[in-house]
Image (tube, rainbow, N blue to C red; front, side, top):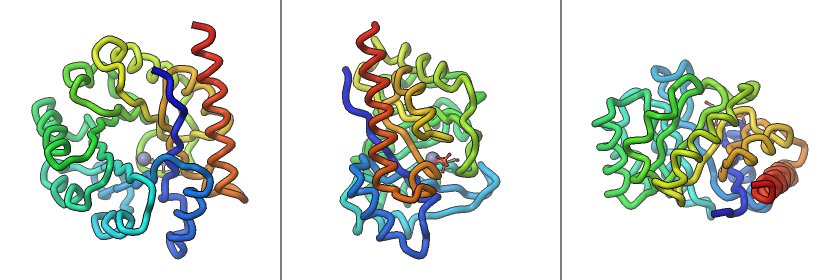
Length: 232
Ligand code: DX5
Ligand code: ZN
């Protein structure tokens, strides 16, 4: 069912010395989530933020937290993050066996959070098929995870469409999030393909007016989504 696009600005691109100001700016712009990129230096070649920051964000933010775990040992570390009660927690399919992936999703739900599985650009989308009914969201990476400011990988919208096709019968309420290189130019492509939530790092926090950038990307995505649904 159509619902307006939600923007999830990634604070990896925000000013770490003025984090609260950055959060207020995106709240003012009408963001739907705060996207928190947790990287452990092993699963991806970068080290970013962890549990203490997630706990402080939880206290400070009015927006729901969307925690994207790019870590090697989600089953070990999930309880630490769940203790902060984020709204949504995403684990990577590549970090876990299929049995452990289902365990991680169950663990997230038991803690009262929504659960998502992320797919790196080269991971077949079919890996989410066995558990799609139990998921709240699938995150389609449109860059190799690790760094903000990368270029959108052409063809990622096709992967969004493939996830949307899988979800059509099995889980029509499933949200599809896209992460990497999303801005006003790429939002229309992925939203026409079925994306509901757009992660934006540099397109929002690298803009002169981040609140306006949130509005602009959302408007570009909503227009494309409405147009695509009209054409079907
Ligand atoms: C990449 C992260 C992204 C990234 C997005 O591994 O998961 O969330 O920060 O940044 P942009 O929008 O600049 O590609
Ligand atoms: Zn992310």
